Length: 135
Image (tube, rainbow, N blue to C red; front, side, top):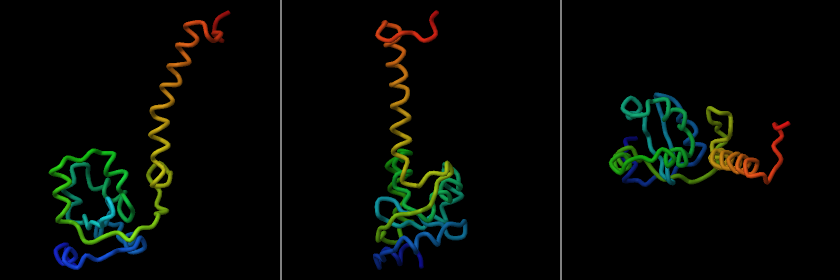
């Protein structure tokens, strides 16, 4: 089925259907509730084909939005649209071994830990806490 035929039909795909397309021969991703067949775009993707293959077969909305794609890039996705996503949760894991939808905690900690360390250093320097390294 071509992208144009699918657009006309407005087919709805389940998670089970999307999860079957995780190879260079058939690579589907879900972004913002829409299913895209990006197989023909793999070699042209500026981030490399591995980025799309890693996200294939799952809801890649969070990863897609984290990158901050340009308006022309978002508009160009329309030609790869094949249908709507019926929903569901993916058990697919990311390269780091976490679940695909658990990136929020890592992002929070990425900002929270340095702030806490800076506050601790300031507290020690201003005498609010005893310096454990001082004799």
